[in-house]
Length: 219
View 1: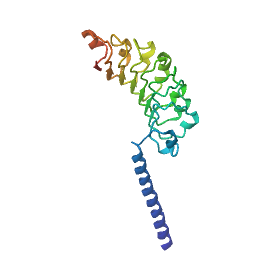
View 2: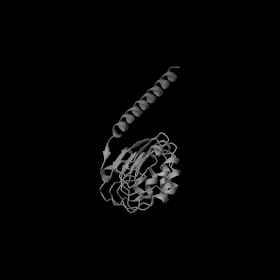
View 3: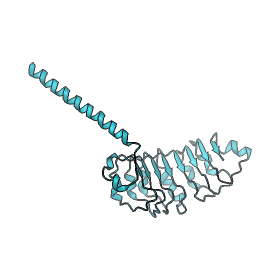
View 4: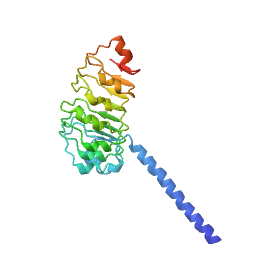
């Protein structure tokens, strides 16, 4: 009986130690949630601890194999990096929630985008070459994409297939060339907020009732 009691005590002590260690690890991870890395070299020293990575204005050419290292990455900015192609490896960022690809030179989104199942917010501002109509089917397969930024893209109208983005709740069309609220907005049944300021939009009374089905519009 003494041996059994002694063994039970050892097991209990071991479990307590493991539990306390897990709690300590959780605290360390939480402290890193808001830390933003701006150097790829620094981030690669412990990529599993990187939750926010801002590589804006660095003109980096990052190999596809690099991205699979960032298992916990939630925020990524590649803004103004003059990318002619978006790396396919970005599709490995399964925990990514916010992605900023604004101000680049690419024409299409890679098919690997379909893997970004947790992506909630996407910035595609100041994209002069992006073929939006070809990108819509890819974006439509992102179940958690709720916020889409298409600001400063020189848009006069929305692509015909824009109604595929039924999951979108907030849409930013600031600083484009719209003269009225785009027709495709009607099909976005989950849309709650539309921002069209810095356009030449004139909204007649009858459109304000029919075009946005209760959507809050900012001019």
